[in-house]
Length: 289
Image (tube, rainbow, N blue to C red; front, side, top):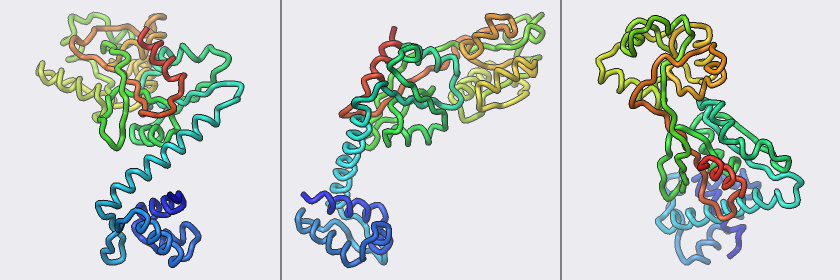
């Protein structure tokens, strides 16, 4: 097989237009058309149907594109893996949801961060950005509090690595003289994660089941900001205690009450790869221990 033909076909399939693809590849339209016809003749099937000015994949074309994506992805993976060969230090690239507890991230990375032969690259971002980076091999592993959907087009491997209780956490002044959990939720304003988070959804279900309508002081999509607002006495934060471990140990914040039945789970997500980064196994084994 001529892999240039495969590359040209893949580009046309993604763009859906011969003229634009030829410009993108710096080829004449006639030359690109000839390359596509040669590839179709080699496979013995038409790969495109023309619909107006667009080229639409036939059934054979969709099959060919799946294989083309797999072939080029394997090549990218090979380069990403073997480019590390001979380097003085091994590199592992970790993505973490921006709202994830920094203390939890530190504990997960602990098996590697003290090793002199390892460099850890840590990136934070949104779910969409991080999964795209994982699929394009810019990341080796992703930390999140939501397990991914797994299908044939994105074969994620998800590991449930921890589950943390969730509590009401605030300054000693906010928490003194509390009778019980319901009393706290009735009289103290809350600092909550934003509505799209798993933890917030779980809390809302829990509160509704108890007939509670708590006063909301702030809705925040960043754990560090929730911790800061709690320290400033703005309200009681709904958080896993690990997120404010240092403040709890010094007494700056106190755990007013644990919310029974409400937990936050943490997941490590990787992509099924032919050449996996061996450091990922070290991280997963460390979290299992």
